[in-house]
Image (cartoon, rainbow, N blue to C red):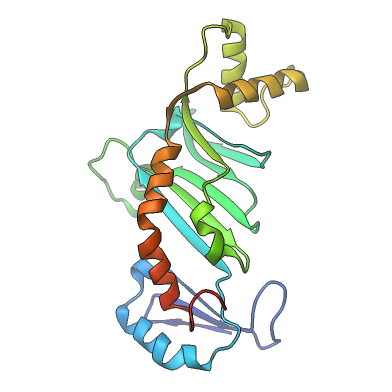
Length: 231
């Protein structure tokens, strides 16, 4: 069964005991929206009753005012990629990985989402969000390197790349698998060119955002762990 505490925390208790998918007792919450009163209640009442405490999922979000629809986004290693395109042909969201995997990345037009789901208009010309969803017992120890495999950069082709290959690369960039008539060799070459033809690279900004927040976020994690994140 499950209950909602203070309209901010989802509390679940598995009457059948722990399983591969869930522990006996779990809490789901967004620390940015959780009342301070609950943290006090958790640390003084709930935490002392718990054993084998750990994080099963962590979500980390980074916002940027760059228009990421005009950027090339991929991963260094082969990863399932699922772009969502608007009826007007503009990229709205792109997913990397699978929802229940150890690392799932969502990159989406946050400004458009706020407008459509919350009828909220913002003055910024662009607002995009990069979200990392991490699962597994080690997520509290590995979150600082969650962006390690991600690529986000504008494309600047070397002069040696012909117009034919540039057009082919653009076709691959805008679709999941490229054009049907392309051979596997041509698709691989296009992906290699896209990864190597860097213009403006956004990943140093992402790295820096995580680094600047590391101490603060680690302290927040330790608040929720009796004895720290080693347990």
